[in-house]
Length: 101
Image 1 (cartoon, one colour):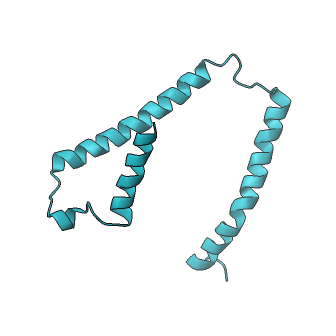
Image 2: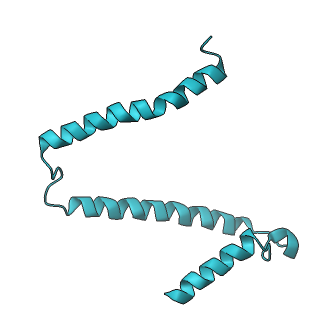
Image 3: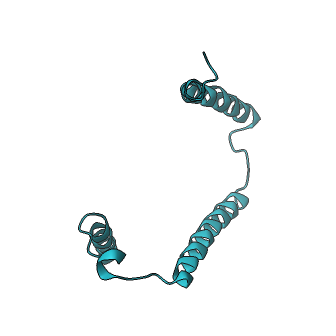
């Protein structure tokens, strides 16, 4: 497992900081089929992740483990505190867009 992390760090560092493998430096033109395959692989990865999460959830004995009361309380607190947390951002957007004042 350590060589994998070493190669990952080396690859990231070479692209991010040292600029060793940039297409402009090596005069490489990426074929369109490679760009399309990267898009397909990224979409497949997201789909597989969602499938595995759904499979994990489906294998649970109970969907609501803590009971209906605590679940309702948790949902209500999420709505209240989520709204309060996003309120400053909403106010700034309204001021920037000119809806206030």
